[in-house]
Image (cartoon, rainbow, N blue to C red; front, side, top):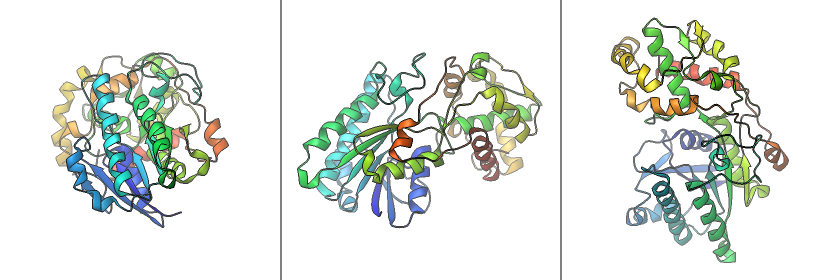
Length: 352
């Protein structure tokens, strides 16, 4: 299969890994589009404001060959209502442009997640299945989903495209310039605690330490996105994508501590936003001593984001039956994947 992919949000953890995966796949070419030129090297990038139709239209000529649209961008807002409005508008703007100027558009793939089931609000039925009722809104997933469902059917038959949505959970992988990245947060947290001579306590509640958790590596998700873009069976489908099994942090944490040559310690319930403030001052010296690439700690971690994830007390489990039935069989071992990504951050001089 060959094609030209347009990735909205190629600088984030999902878009970055997808762009690299497409760039390495014979027959594919990738174009990244976001407000700033922050995608990976070797991928064509367009810097444009997805909320500005006039700005987007200036790039129409360069998008005529697009056959697949991947929506990995998210525009944050102060509240969920405003966030939903902005994110459905960016998708509508992109579709308007491509429907006018890219006659070969075949499929639109949305990157959503288990917030669809209300996982961010409280306990939900697990394992979550794609046919389960959605959680309460507002949530931009719902608005984007409605938009592609209606728009795909409204296209003239000769130019009709199809859609698919994937639902990962807590994507593991490196992204530049975003503090909302769990694995990078763990790595920076470990580096600062080690510098202070402290053991590696788990940065969350006892309940979170022992509950069933899940994740999706950015590498696995990139493979799933490419599969979803071309598999006929994925047309009009919503599909959970997780590593293939759940885990408990209490089982993985000793190995994380060993990777950083630190003694593990029990959960510390003090919020990261409070606990880490006095330790942040050590970061510039760590950068100088180890030649680290990013001196601005705000580009690497958002402690409030970590507090949110490590404060969850209910199980997070998604069923993968549908993905397997449709033809996606790839898996990741959670423990091995976490250590691989953390070790990669050290190798690439993101952390010591």
